Amino acid sequence: MYLKIIIFIAFIKFIRNGDCQIHEFPSYFEFGISTSAYQIEGAWNEDGKGENIWDRFTHEYPNRIADRSTGDIACDSYRQWENDINLVKDLGVTYYRFSISWSRLLPTGFSNKINPAGVRYYNNIIDKLLQNDIEPMVTLYHWDLPQPLQDLGGLTNPVIAKYFRDYAIVVYTLFGDRVKKWITFNEPWSICLSTYENGNHAPGIAMPGIGCYLCSKVLLLAHAKAYHAYDKRFRKTQNGIVGITISTFWYESKTLSEKDAVATERALQMNFGWCMNPIFSNKGDFPKVMKDRIEFVSKSQNFSESRLPTLTPSEIKYIQGTYDFLGLNHYTTRFIEEGNLTPSQVPSFDDDVGVKMEVDPKWEKSAAHWLFVVPWGFRRLLNWIRVKYNNPLVFVTENGYPDKGELNDEARIRYHNQYLTELLNSINDGCNVQRYTLWSLTDNMEWSSGYTLKFGLYYVDFNNSSRPRLPKSSASYYKGVINNRSLPNFTNC
Image (cartoon, rainbow, N blue to C red; front, side):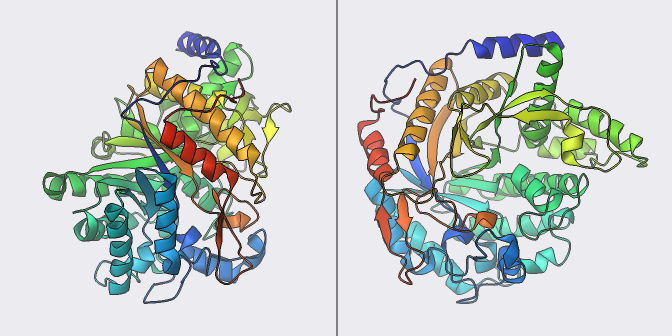
């Protein structure tokens, strides 16, 4: 096994860091743009919408948001949705990825009460998109759990998987005659770690080394229930497809040593493979290296059993293969070295993984402390997915660059041009990538960063009550890429 890991890492290092070839995108390849409900809609308590965990979190703990802001108004897209669709149309994309607010549709979180204003709002968006030949690509859950469900224990309570299935059935029933691409969850890895490991995201519950694993099992079962519900009740009549979006860095071995190669594989499996393996692998279940490591560490900490919940044989079978595509969110890369494998007595996810993560000081920085510009990592990740998971259909559902809101955003243009170059190279390598979704349409409420980070192609003036949008240079760049179906020749190689 270790020899295979070393050979693969050695092979991947021979993939050149950008081939400096300017070539066109395949005819089947599609470009899109993305947003999420809480980050843009606003109208947090209007027209029958219920409270969600981010409403509660930002109101009760303003000091935990970088600029003490909320999504109460955000981009005001609840009122300006037509204007936003016009921006989407102007870009020339073929699809628009957005999410439905569970609380706007089902104010209490339960399926017995449907909010007519919420139904009307999303019907308007879907119909307007289709009138403009733009396909709606809908995410069911983008981090905004209804607060009443959080009051029951949130995503660590197994019953939430059933309530999510009920919610999904309502959405399929209401909109599935027109929506043909569904994403169940956006970034289960981020949901579970940011919520239950470090408490940085709503509802802000830090349960290191325990809560994140409970959360992951609930999300996997909830995803599988929503997938099977579509498969059994809607697929034949609606002819759509269902996937999940999983996020990951690329993890690159710092050296070709065996110990760093093993550490890198462990980092990949315990971060990305954590949710990939149960759904996309031939055997299902959590990665073996993850199960073995957490069981070992748990026993050394005097737990009676592993802190990683067991998936039963029936659950493994139920979850395995529940995908029509992989939604992939990718932004950046880390170097990996073997860490201290002697367990701490304090449980934590980082201690379980047991690696050192580093960045190269030469890598270009962004406005976000965590995002460095490492385009070659994108290609290596896509090739690892191709080899490890039998080359599934991949839709890149997020890739973006944060700055402080410059209208002449040359750094964002460079970032996207370099990452798109590596995506093209991966397609030439044989990777089955068919969509690229840029994050994001507009500057928006970036969760615990508030409005301090800007990812949008369109600048939003959040100090102006009318929330005007202004195109950045990157909007023209992306329009040009889509229109020409090729990249301009200023790519850094």
